[in-house]
Length: 321
Length: 244
Image (cartoon, rainbow over all chains, first blue to last red; front, side, top):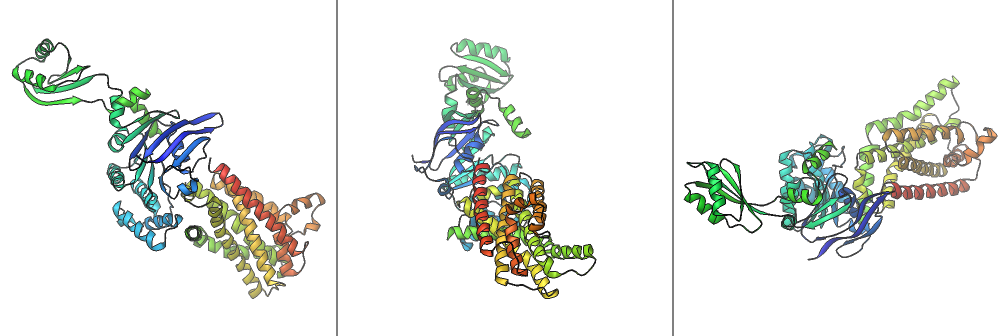
């Protein structure tokens, strides 16, 4: 796979403080690469270094295998910063046209592209409205459109869905998927773990300026999985749940059984679990099985195990910020 | 071609968004008349237009350019829209050149109001029109670059305004506009000679009343050196401070 972004020992220091500590990673062509970490982990600093908004203290950045000057690289990238940053006095259409002009696009081309993006992001009706009159969600969408106006090969999205309404979040997530399907490589930072899980092909966990682990969602989860679990839900008819549990333990001594509530049992084992014998046994006991599912640890659990950081605390910190 | 498109659009955006807004246009018109009125009230008699003409022209340029550029850049930095410009694939030099071009044009346009008013309404004489145009252009450029110098230091809009005034008001009294440099106390004269505005005002005085401290070519040379120094020093500071 071709590396479109490659960071080698990238470092950023502010005096004695090290914000990013020699991180190395590659982003492949056509993937959505996620950067997940708490406040102050170095996510935005990394984006700033990659996009030319911060000087690097050490290491190297390669775009498409080339250690090119940042001004050359900027023609290939689009950036959506953590805060919307367009011109208050200009309307949506003017803002997009102006951003296109910064990349040297001809008037006709930028006007056509601006119209297309406004339509795509559901902002056509608001095209003539001043940016300052936009809602937070609309501002975010227009900022994304501004980063896309010159059709970049790589799109950097820094916390694109933070603090906006649910409908806009959905639309932005769909937009990210659509852009990726169209071939844009996406570098996404987020503190929403479910967003990373849903969108990203690969994720890097970053804590205190260091990348702790990189992998696909499956790889990250698999690496932290200690036991295999299944949960079987049943309709309680005649037997007492405790009696069922005792029978189950007697019939399958190699697994650990636990009553989750009155109508479900969780079965855990270090070995792979075949659900069918358990379903068969419970049915023979006169229970009607309503659901049986393999319990997979979530990315959130994997994140907590790997980094030792509580997700709720991370979310609260972000909201406070 | 791509760079020319970017340059032109930054300039056009600044002119539309900031410089050609009604409050700024009206300020450009009212300001010189307010100064003339103030001089009239102070002297309680009709004043000699030739004596105040260079001062009014220089003040219109100086006040228009220094504060406007520093305020607009600080405002854009505060709103983070300036990041859009820094993320564009154009050099910092070209970006800043586009930003100062709007302020320079604003300064030149501002100067036309007192020039037209003085010549047409008050029948003031212009000894050398070409030299006047040269003086106005150089004064606009150097005042704008002073504004740029200020904007690099300021983080808030109010700071930009405060710093502008901190520079401008002493300059008015030290650059020979109202008090000739030769009439200043001995210890203040070196200060006058390190102010770029002194040389711009000297060109304008030569162009309007035919007297000056230095030869116009020497003034132009000194102003060119000041402009190059201020531009490069500001670029150096922008790269150092704004791209951390």
